[in-house]
Image 1 (cartoon, rainbow, N blue to C red):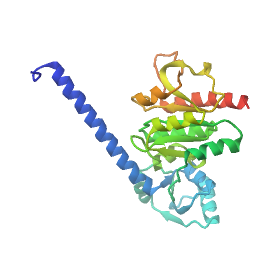
Image 2 (cartoon, helix red, strand yellow; image 1 turned 135 degrees about the horizontal axis):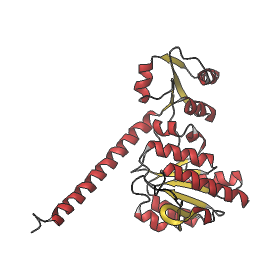
Image 3 (tube, rainbow, N blue to C red; image 1 turned 90 degrees about the vertical axis):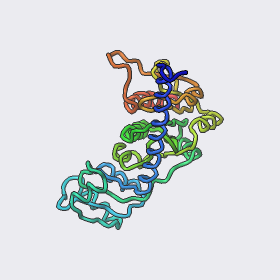
Image 4 (cartoon, rainbow, N blue to C red; image 1 turned 135 degrees about the vertical axis):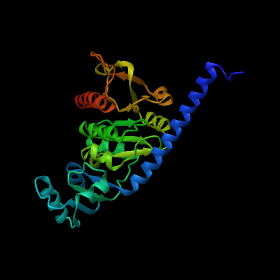
Length: 280
């Protein structure tokens, strides 16, 4: 009955889009699992912060003949810690990192994930109420890395990411975080929605960053807070949004109607951090 109708064609198109999206997420999950196993950290800032963190490093690769600026500091620190330093041609580094390595890469132990208990313990040690970031299906590793950098810079106690349908802690994420990934706790969970329920039971208020909420600067963040940032295209998933206690936004006065998710994180987390420090 529907073979020649527009509604039939539209229905077929919607089904195809759902399948395509599902396939994309399956490929993303598989890629993340593979990259998490290798743990190659590259870029001068990222490698330097890795060394400062004290995490186990198996080997340092340096571009042959490159001994200037921060490379000297990285090599000296590696040798002081007894880490083998191997000079290689640029092609080897390109193959390891995909490029943009700035002449240095480290083969490191995989970053150990934290638990929810760890985040609350960190807040207690720091003497403030928990400030937590929830990354809901952030697919772009550059955006996830930038969010990690913003969260660490704002003094957040940790970041929660989902096990599936999200970028994992890959080398690209580490590079985009400019080394911040080494200094902040990251929790990987099976289900964001159920994790939010657990946070609520522990007295944490949940704030969802979306385009149709109340102005973030009129929002009180002086209690234990978790701020959810959604994917680049779809925003916060429906079920997660329903579980948020508040929906907050950044008012826009120009011709564009939204910011990149990592830019939005920088703005909102800065205000949340300011309020929490004033309320101590």
